[in-house]
Structures are given as structure tokens and as C-alpha cells.
Length: 167
Image 1 (cartoon, one colour):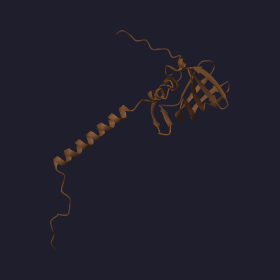
Image 2 (cartoon, helix red, strand yellow):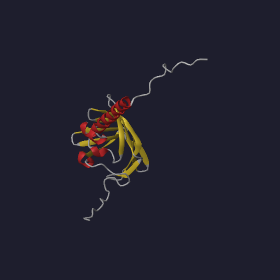
Image 3 (cartoon, helix red, strand yellow):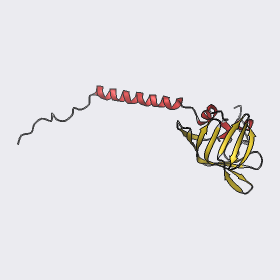
Image 4 (cartoon, helix red, strand yellow):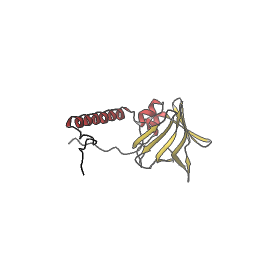
């Protein structure tokens, strides 16, 4: 029995080919990193749609935004805090909705506790210097100035700021 040479097997990659491949891989990863860092944050995107950043709590990890205005926002976890009056707000880890011409509608993942009952906030409309929050047919209006800063989970807008030492 006679064996022929292995001419049908591909040649082993040369160090030059391997180096070119690694360089191409590195450049594509660097380009992808640049594109990701150029994307606006969820808070910046809100401002581009003429909403204050403070309607979302701190802790947004990521978001998805479609061309048709539908969005998904992902927080680091469920978030709950008290706001002006006796309202308790709850944001789920995933918030969805649609943004169109000064309106956030079809909202899911945000609810407010009034007395002893929880109601989903299904729409937010910007009207001049006010935001109107809709819970079914009911609504409440608040000045934009209430939403300049992002609330923090558990303590909302009334968190004690940590003291900075001069050390």
C-alpha cells in the first residue's frame, strides 16, 4: 500500500497570516467599543426627546431603542421610593413603552401606590413646564423642576448626601 503526500490538507497558517488576523480582530473590537461609547445614555436620550432625566431613577444599566419609538430600559434591579405627597413609586427591572412627540405611552414597569392600591403609570405627557402622569383616566401634574435630578432607589430625591472629607 502506498500513501501519497498530504497535499489536499490546507497549509498551516503562517505567523504573518495569524498576525494579520489578530490585528483585524483587535481593530474591529476597538471600533465596536468606540461605537458603543458614542451612544447616548438613557438619560441623554430622554433629554433629546424633551423629557427631564429625573423621570428615571439612578441605576440604568442599558436600553434598547427602535426606530419606531418603542424602547426597553433595564435597571440594575427593582427600585422603589417615596415622592412628594404620600406617593410611593416602583420601577421594575425592565421598563417598556413608546416615545412620540412629547409623550411616553404604553408604559409598563412603572407603578404608583395611592393609599393602599398600586396603579400602573401608563402615559407621561410633557405640557410646557409640566409633566402629566396618567394612571388610566386619572392624571396628576408636576413641574419639570421636580425632575432635574435622578432619584435613588429606596430614598428617592431626599437622600442624604455623603459628606466628603478633606483628607
